[in-house]
Image (tube, rainbow, N blue to C red; front, top):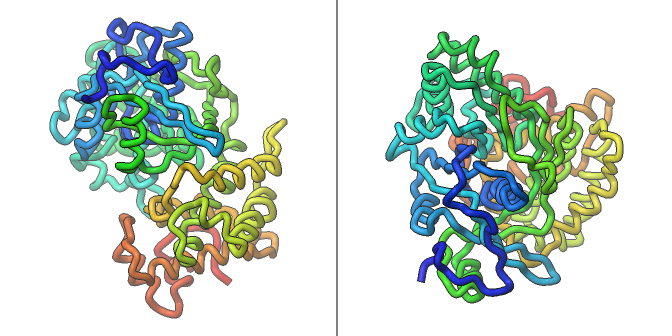
Length: 439
């Protein structure tokens, strides 16, 4: 039996305690993968449970129909399985109403963005989904492709303008430094090239707040789905697995209405930068280092790699001695405590977070996760032994038989092949643009 609104939930499983059918869709989320379903959709579900109304989510998959097949047959319902060493908790989420596949019905996506009830379009499309060139500018040729977020957003904005509707908030929830400013700049480049008539309206009507998101969400396996089914008594093809920790810091700069996320655990702040920088350089930087160093030592999962007595000191030094000094912490932001909490989270044996999953898209992640820290120390005449070990492990990964899931896969293999790999990757004019230069 498949999960549905008619599925009787066991007493241990909490479900939506609001009328789902009475809620309008206020959010269109582009890139509705496991992370969004375990993070932003949970906060939105909590907000509606606390009394907010009309914040249902219309999910959009730009390419694949997998999530649509998982959720639409279940009326948008799915479960979140929160796991720790102390046990697990299962919860059913009702915030997602339906999932559109842009490749199958592009007009439906445009119509959803243009709908009068829509106030927020949010994104988790990963770093490569922003279609940036090596210098950070928008790849204009790629941005008109069938799976480009820009063409759908621009068409939706044009329809809103034509209908006399207000602008909307574009909310990037991806691991990019200054993600809100990056999205605004790239969107303006796209509009200037292809919709110049929208540029002034966009500037005056739409906002792009910065965000910092933090929750570990490994890929769901068939064994995970079977475990959920055993508890639920129904098959949930959309189940997601996550940890107990969750954090969402949002710049309070919205173009119109928004859910009261701050009442259910999110932090609305004037400046996201200290939180975002700490997350990128400490958590994400350590995760990428664990991936390449751990894979090189034969480990498959994060908890195995951090338990390796040769690996843990490298990761702890990366966070405490290399990344933390580069961060201007916000008042009350304790980076030492944060590092300790991260080590505990990495050691969670119940998540089975695959290193090869984290190793994807290295060329898109490494600049903000490693290279900014390396450049900061280099200008002060200092070196970073842990990050340099991570660089060496990444090069070894590129030279190995491991599959490279990266938009620059062919160029990376070629650059990493010779004895001058570091210079070809990171030197002046190298494949990866940054202010850091290998010694």
